[in-house]
Image 1 (spheres, rainbow, N blue to C red):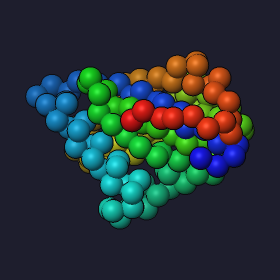
Image 2 (spheres, one colour; image 1 turned 30 degrees about the horizontal axis):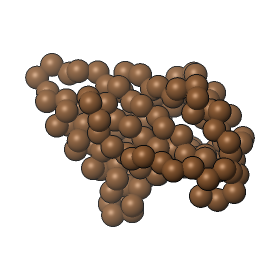
Image 3 (tube, rainbow, N blue to C red; image 1 turned 45 degrees about the vertical axis):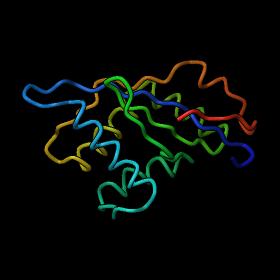
Image 4 (tube, rainbow, N blue to C red; image 1 turned 60 degrees about the vertical axis):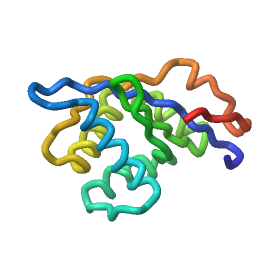
Length: 136
């Protein structure tokens, strides 16, 4: 990691949609998020604009996994200011709104709709710039 940066674990819980296999759709979405972060699928203008919103705040989704009926994202905050902004975005509905739109564009049938975004308080106490290991 670069000096002055930290990766933050973000948990996304989703609405159960009647008649849908949510876990299957979440796994499909995680695969698309991984492809997006690795650059193996093209970015639509809409997704690019949403990711630019994060990038303008020195943030980037760097990894996604599916665990126990939820999606876990790792968001790289490239500065103390970015970490503070992520906290503010998670406390308001801004992060939920951005992720909802990204999910909708990656799975257009609305199969995965975020209900809550959880960032535990200890994530914001991480020492920016200090090297730590990340468990994916």
